[in-house]
Amino acid sequence: MPPARSEQKIRFRLDPYVKWAIGWRGDRKGWLRQAQWRSLNGKIRYAVISTPWGYVVADTNDQIIGQAAYNWKSSEIETIKTAYRLLGQPQGVFVDVGANIGTTSLMALYLGFSRACGFELDATNYRVARASYILNSLEGRASITHCAVGAAEGRVGELQSKTNIGDHRVAPGQQLRLARLDDLLREIGIAPQDVALVWMDVQGFEAQVLKGAKEQLRAGTPWVMEFCPPMLGADREALLDMIKGRKITRLSTEDNKADATVITVEDLRQFAPSDPQGWWDILVESC
Image 1 (cartoon, rainbow, N blue to C red):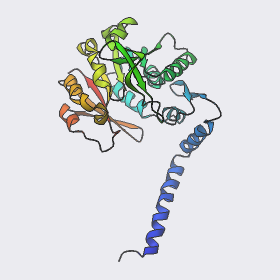
Image 2: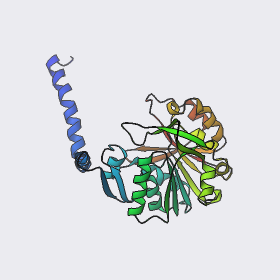
Image 3: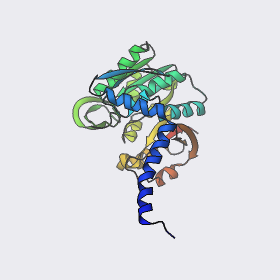
Image 4: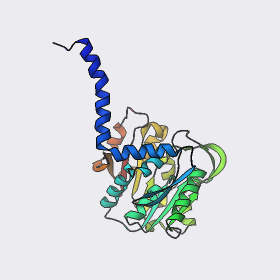
């Protein structure tokens, strides 16, 4: 016999509370730090966060990347650790395309990469990343360039996200330099064979970046990138064509624990996330 209507109402009301209480008891420190971070908003503009991978400067309005750093919880650290392990713990240069506030480059240097070179579209993110590098005395090992990276030299604009500083995107305009990755690395004295890993997070602009990185592709440089079909749009097949014939590993993270699964281009072609922001992190290597 099904429960009475009153019992159904009680269960409906209690279940969310029980879930909240379990979450609170299991991660009280995380909940407290989340509340602390939000309390800073409006009081100070920037905060310096001490993390296991160094000091991170963050805008207190940033409730995603900055808050993750404050909580010491970032799925990126698990993803990059997995890629670093799969690649045999390389000691070369880490290239960070779409560097945001520089946290991924800091993690890379913490793991053991010899140098980190970043490229960032947004002016505020660029300045914040530079501040973090200076605080960590990394001027000789970490650099960042304010520009967009794409298929050709030119000028572009920026479409800024109001809710996520990691979701700014290339847009039509004339405000920013657009340059090929091959040219940018040559300008700062980085040869293709010196690059141990390219990390790319460019919100659907991945195919355009790869088109301007032919020297890196010929050199067999490994790449970690987001594969998000809704963001890629018409560039999806172009991206798949450029990574065809290479080893592709999906790097998945759940509960801050990473896993790695070898997949195929066809698996990527069939990937159709129900979430318009759904993506897979993939490691692409030469066979």
